[in-house]
Length: 273
Image (cartoon, rainbow, N blue to C red; front, side, top):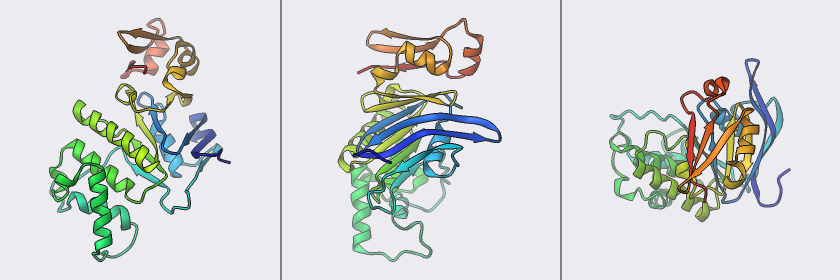
């Protein structure tokens, strides 16, 4: 059951794949219009959690509940990897239009209403100026805006994004985060965005879900990004150090297992609001 105002509830959700535990008793909820960062190192279970919410991965135990609000398309999704052939003769507006009728067979007939919806969505993501350019000619930041428009054109209640900030320059990252924060408020769409670095999200996040070794801590940044909370989550000592308004989350150098567990992503840098 969902509490009043909730769009998504993940309750004691566990997932095992090929006999290996991937997620363990994940528990959190999102309200309408709430922006949540799903933070964790590579291999922590972020993509598995998103795929579980989408129904692509079966739960071993627990439940996931989504309030559709009476909409057929209650969830929008921007995948982690979206390969675009640079020579594909598809414009930005064509991909956005597929969000309206890409699940139907045949070629959709043009109509003023359909064109208006596409134009409105392109304007909402600040993509009007490159709407008629080929997708393969767009920058990474521009492509992300088009993918977001494609996912949001049917006004879903929930938007899931898997590492949308990866491989973007700092300016594009800031622009995409600000865009998602604005759209979540305007459309009252709950946003769950996965990333390995929380820093770019802190000005936008209402909530953080921090994943480590398949377990999660959820709440405000101040509640979660604390030595005692993260140490319990990781299962070994974690230092949370505030320096010049920033926060370093660092595993103890004395823990060989800790270093191995987070190899390749040993430090998360964040700024607590």
